[in-house]
Length: 98
Image 1 (cartoon, rainbow, N blue to C red):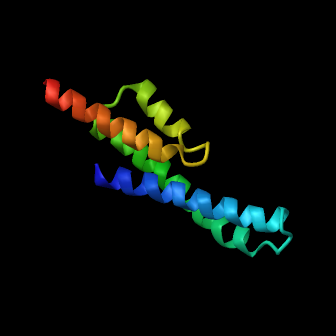
Image 2 (tube, rainbow, N blue to C red):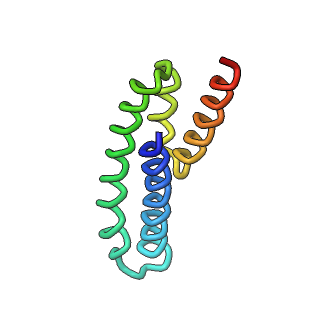
């Protein structure tokens, strides 16, 4: 599902932007502009990831544990990309063996 791949990657990129903004705000003390910009972007992309993960769960017939891992992957930075790669490889394996 292309939408899932795109949103998973976008969620990781928005995490990177937010973490960069937080670095400049709290470590360098260069103001909070980065957090003001990337905070809402990350929040929106995060919500999109949750919705697309739930849609993928239904359309791709994931088990409940796989869907829950997919949702949990949105919490640590960059784990959405790892989860997307794992799901893509896993579905490829099932397709070949079927």
